[in-house]
Length: 186
Image (cartoon, rainbow, N blue to C red; front, side):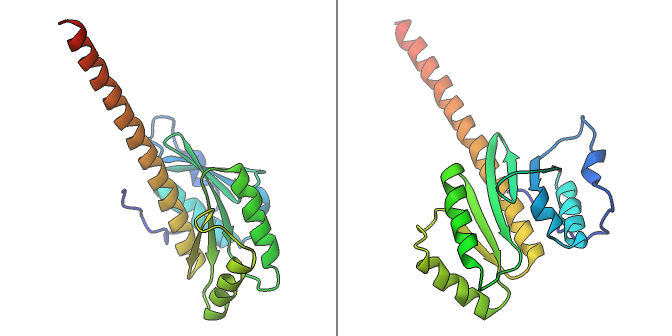
């Protein structure tokens, strides 16, 4: 897996991804929900923008249902990113996760749970709302920066895995054609 650069560099006020040239290599595209963006602190959005640019991702702001959709290696991976766990408002998180899980084959829910109480609340709620283990995958984190770094690593890993799967299928197909040609020539 690629070594990701940690994103604690000077945040850029404008979107640094807009300066990416067409000749530069892109690790993929990140689409961010505009409503989610507007609910976050500007410094966190700058962190995200800088982190994505440092890791060769393009960033687009669009009105989408999940908080993020990454397209890496021809695979779309969707994310719900809960930056503030509200113990009194967990039903909306789990109902949204269930709804989006039906729409996306690859959905992850990243939760910022910095305290023990929040973690306990999440665990109780997970079973209360009868979530199916691994559908979607929940990723608890201690802080929002770590959460976003995990999101990018998951998206990248899924894309690399998809590319390797495609390469393996192509190699198998080429071998099959070679074997078929060899057998037909006898």
